[in-house]
Amino acid sequence: MNFLSLLAVEWKKLRRSRILLILGTATVMLWIPSVLNADLNFGMQAEGISPEHNFLIQGFMGMAWFMFPASMVVGTVLLAQTERTNHGILRMLALPISAGKLCLAKYMILLGLAAIQVLMMTGMYYISAAIASQMQDYEFLLPPLFVLAQAGKLYVSSLPMIAFFWMLSVCIQTPIFSVGIGLASIVPSVLMINTKAWFLYPMDYPFYVITAEYGKLASNLSEAEIELLPWIVAAAAFTGICLAVSCMCFGRNERK
Amino acid sequence: MGIALEYKKIKRTGIIPGCLAGGFLAALIPVLELAVRSEQYTGLMQPPLRTIFQADWQMMSMLNMLIVITAACMMYHTEYADNAIQRIITLPMREEAVYFLKALLLSGMCLGFLAMEMLSVSVCILHWFGGEGGAFSAYYGASFPEAYLELIQDLLWNLGYCFCMLLPVVFLSLLIASACKNMWISLGVDVVCVFMATMIPVKYFALAIFPFALPFQISEGAGTGQTAGFLAAGIIEVLVIGAAEILFLRVRRSLA
Image 1 (cartoon, rainbow over the protein chains, first blue to last red):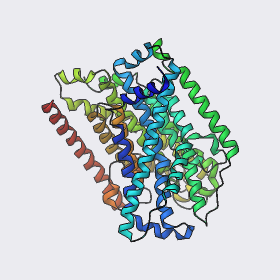
Image 2 (image 1 turned 90 degrees about the horizontal axis):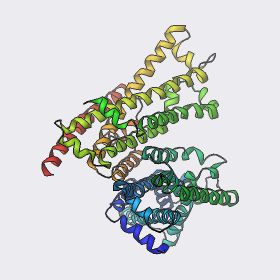
Image 3 (image 1 turned 135 degrees about the vertical axis):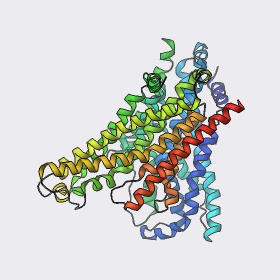
Image 4 (image 1 turned 120 degrees about the vertical axis):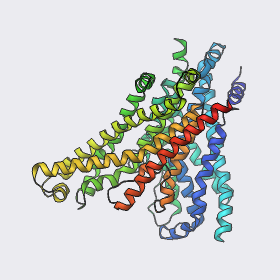
């Protein structure tokens, strides 16, 4: 079985999981307060950010700080539990496919879910920005290329984090610990983005990137320049280690 | 039959060590915060409890909530995972009894980790605010037993208040967990609710009594009227959610 058909099989398993409904609800919930409080965006001139930029970035920050990471934890639960109930995973492991390949395919599916959620968020942004523009009589819509670039940065910077969550769910068999550690690791990211060692903590990457964008757009705030050099190395190493460990651990408990 | 049985069910799921570990993490927050930035807080001339609560309770209550929702999801996951719930339903006992026993058990664990957090808060107060001319002696007085007794009284009151604010989350997350067969759906719904709660502006009482927003409330620095209002809201919510669960189980049973 080649990798693509493996991906197709894994994707099919999620068909009746209603995960997209949850991911979608999260993005809708994200923008409702922004639309209702759209007039607050005009009070941000002190930071030197334009109302339409503020509208976008505040929403994205809300997403990057809690909802997006937490949704990914839910995604890992979904991927792990659909197959553990009724021992579907045993049948998968009995097939002549390498376990590592299977593990990577599932990680890719998780990345797919992440991409879908980011796209949903962007779509909802346009809907809510249009509504806010109508309500406030002010143009909140930003050019699609700019918005997609922000969403893309959020997505790419979240890859190490997702790899970490995936490793947790593969290596730790008791769901309470994998979910608990995953969710608990989101909370300190507020503290970590303010430290010098932020690049050592992958869970804060998306939040850090969006906060840095905020600093760039707000002319009166001190600009937090992202230093690419230690970050890219740390992120790549972290992703590699997490994926390697999860590929090695995948199916180990079932084979015993 | 009873709470001992419910305890036996979760004995090997790791919920109790998970709760303890989560409580320990939350208890570490004020210690770390004061260890790193003590000069920012020790100079404040207000009750030391208020200083700590205002600085750290946001994050601590977030962690508490995440512990509760993960534990609630797990508690029902053990029932649903291998269709154990079907055996429970056929037993000569009320189905809602299981729910209330689980709620009782989970609230007991909440008391446990809240007590840990209060202990750490008291240690922080005595260590960082207890010196000569510190906020502790300024507020509680210098006389030996009375000052400490007063501090203990304050801590107990806060423990009770935080516990009452956390109870609606216990009940609602168990209700959600009992309604959904799949763990990722209940976890996803809970996570979306927590996320919504973080975005609710505090100035509206009607919005702030959303069950998942209640744990963010602190009694320190709030007026008596407000405190009483939130307490009443918490108790009413617990009753309403309990009634809703009974109704839900009856309806589901008659439709099944």
